[in-house]
Image 1: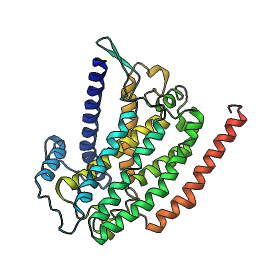
Image 2: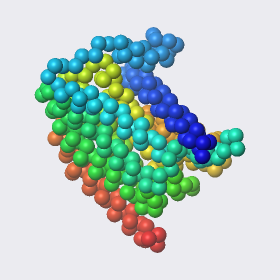
Image 3: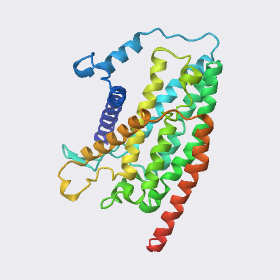
Length: 334
């Protein structure tokens, strides 16, 4: 029993360190990708090839003055950044990074908690992320943050529905809500091959849920100064961005499990490469895709954002479910 507790604590610490490292260097990757797309270098002065830029940014934010406006709702104002960070850290614990390994005579699953309803758990936890934006905007007692918070609430309702429907085809094919079972169901064929429309809708809806361009209407600096985080500074400001990039890691990891076969190699003859390596390659591929989208498309208007969800993505998601059910029925799988 003691060994199990120690192993779980070690896995939690390793997973936390991995997530924070991805967050730190995700900001560097963001700026490097932006630089290359815009035909410039990007960060290059802090350390070799700019590798110490995340450390410099962290130190700068840590030592900046933390200003709390006098008219804010202080408890809620402080709580909002915490709620931005907590959901992705809770969500990543149910994501399997590979099959079990044996260390010191103990069989160790590469997941903190192998929940048989992991998909439902992820959606339940992810829904809390919007509270950080809504509460931060409302507690700031300022018009621009409030508008950003209200936009986020409407955006979450619209794209959370589409996000859930985009993976229903995967759940129907796998016959399970467990991420481990879904990965095992892709041993021969990845679901991206049988659910290409679902995968595309997932990427678009995840981008909107993450409030990233072209769907970053809750902050929209050209309209709302900075949106929901206008009144935040120092580490409170940093925690919102920490939550954003941690959510990107979670969305990428979930996409790798649902559509790209998880730790399964693309071809059987490549199975000599450890499964966790394949998983990380797929995770970073989706992460890079999210970065590429941000710097390739202009921001939508708010009415375009809503129209795109309800008039196009929602019908396409329903069509994908009906088509999947029809093919399964035709193949006598249900």
